[in-house]
Amino acid sequence: MTGSTRQVTVWAYGAPADLRKGFDGLSGLVSQRRAQDPLSGDCYLFVNATRKRAKVLLWDGTGLCIYAKRLERGRFACLWRAAEAAARVVRLTMSERQLFLEGSTLVGRVALSPAPFHVEDTQKLLARRGR
Figure 1 (tube, helix red, strand yellow):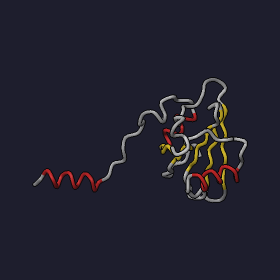
Figure 2 (cartoon, helix red, strand yellow; figure 1 turned 180 degrees about the vertical axis):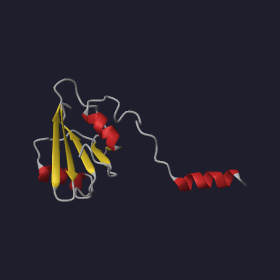
Figure 3 (cartoon, rainbow, N blue to C red; figure 1 turned 90 degrees about the horizontal axis):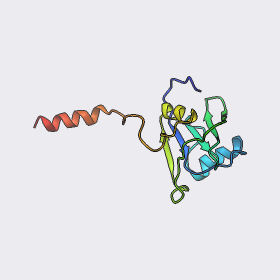
């Protein structure tokens, strides 16, 4: 997973999660609370309330995988605010996910990756300038 070259969307769960949950429990959070399909191939990131532990749920094409990490020092970045925790989902790139799991405190607070480049938008802008 850490060396994957395919395009994967990372969805960070925006509230503290009970990381005692396994495959079924985390899949339930994805499908019931987020109305997403855990078998879509996207990557789902969960953090506990103390932000010392994180789990990643991923469908690799043959089965569900769970990756777990515990920080020995420090805490993972806070991806939620108390008032909006229940509804918040943070979309990350694979690079941002990697930085998050390495303990970067910037993830979720500022955009670390540029916005996606769309050729159609550029063509429309150029067409407007040419008028």
